Image (tube, rainbow, N blue to C red; front, side, top):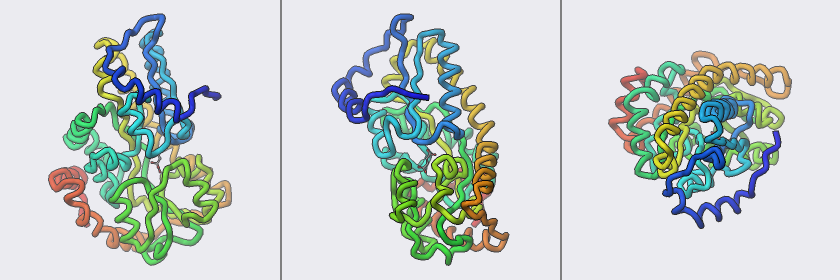
Length: 340
Ligand code: LMR
């Protein structure tokens, strides 16, 4: 699909110049549909890529010409480090950043989702996103001019490098790319690795040129960014989770006609179900495609190796208790039954 769009800088500048304009209620009419720019950083054939296109389809169909959703995948409009500011300025109306990327916005509590081994499976994770903690975190966003619309799944992370990486000792001295989360930084340090925060759009090249030695991600992100071409080993550690919060600009959202907002909420609800239903399958298929490529050896840690990793990483929970909030952490433990 070819998408025409202004350069990132033009959009940022225009957004800054008319920042106040987002407060003006939108005039939704057949002549001038409300335009929702939905920007994200991953490929279209991923859970988030497909979820955002499903939202576009449902929203446009149900709003009957009153809304146009423009989806910009692959960091083509904004990349990590730019998109949150762009949303606050009103240069983009929707994003779905990973839950690991809310620290820079000033809502560090989202990093509770990054704690190693805190979720054993998606059901435990959903207890949190669909329960009081999920709602509490969305409430915290409002102070930043942001509204949380939904939580979307991706899946559990694998580790990759150009050497075998099954137990903590294997990670010593490796430069590992992470998302912008202190919890993830502490996780890599607890393994003796050197964490390096980097925008998602830059990871492939950094792995290819040796700027970093390895990374962690879900199989769907790993495969669609072609990381299997530049990483010899992938370990099925499932040590952590990547999911998203779909967010919008509060002034934009509150300025919509109420009936249109209700229509969009319905479209989001159904797109969320779709995205969450396909997430596991997308990751399973991506892993199979990596296996078939023959370029990356897939390692399955034994129960003992997994226990060694979990033990080495337990300290990360203690280190970040105050960062993610003692009460929030206690609630998450209660929902998931986590024990170190
Ligand atoms: C990453 O930056 O590694 C991922 O969070 C990208 C994404 O949005 O899944």
